[in-house]
Image (cartoon, rainbow, N blue to C red; front, side):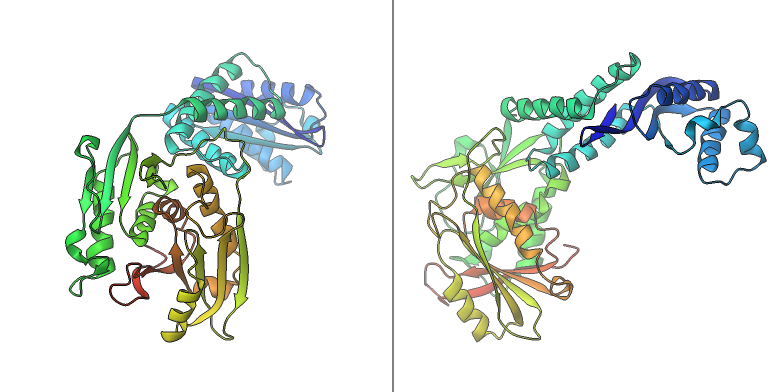
Length: 422
């Protein structure tokens, strides 16, 4: 494989694999051939999949010592029959990993997660694992036949595979759900395994004898961890508070490896799976985001998410009445539709908007990041689920619930609080 930059090859990589052991003589030949195959590169790497014998290990260490001008007698002896002039002024490296399919797929899977993230793609753990498995097999065959591939060609083939898998692969999903306030019963035909929490609330207000974290969040976390596995795919019904939708996403975050998407209620009264359509070419509306200085010498941040309705006035009133130590307000409103029931078009749009919030709060200073993020939101639960999935970097945060029915406080109340470790 060759890596290019501005049309110039700067690194040449050769992959070798064996179920036996690599010998010193093989490494010497491959390194010499790699350098002699003049493609204009100045960096060379032998990527070895398998075990090296003792002489091969010594040879690798000797090359490293030669490049760092730290030759000793053992290294000089190992390099005695190798023409070191070919590596003068060049950077040579070796990578050696065991010949183990599971290990290889894990390495490729981790790299794909980074690649997908940097390419602004969105894929499930299961989809990435499928591509990783195919990529390992392809590269094994390619390396066996000694075939090289340009980085540009590799990226193009990988992009094709990403789009193919994302567009065609749709696994059967197990239904799970969370219910925390009286609402229309889930259709028994859906066969939903759900966590009932209605007894902990009066309407939407938590009963005085219960605590959001100890009695609600811990039960929700246990339910989700006990009833999900990275071997299956899920869809989650969220007949619940926005704070619990956020918390569910935080538990089932991208690093959990769980393939799960939320079921979102539509404006016509039905429901729809908010999954990610990677092939969508739509230009979705983003946020209008403003950063407002609220109080000097205060370092907490208030995040206002005005998606289905405007929260600004009520949230600001609550902050003042409760003397919250807010130094900055980040106010977010969908750029085209404003705060309406039509602000989010589909699951892909919801996920993009949720991901964008991470960039918005990333503008906080270091001292602000160490303080607490207070979240006030009026948004679909599907969006809050995606936001929760991306919240592990938020630091300490507190969510608030609003008395929408105007039956009790007619204002906000504190709900779940997260430390950096929860």
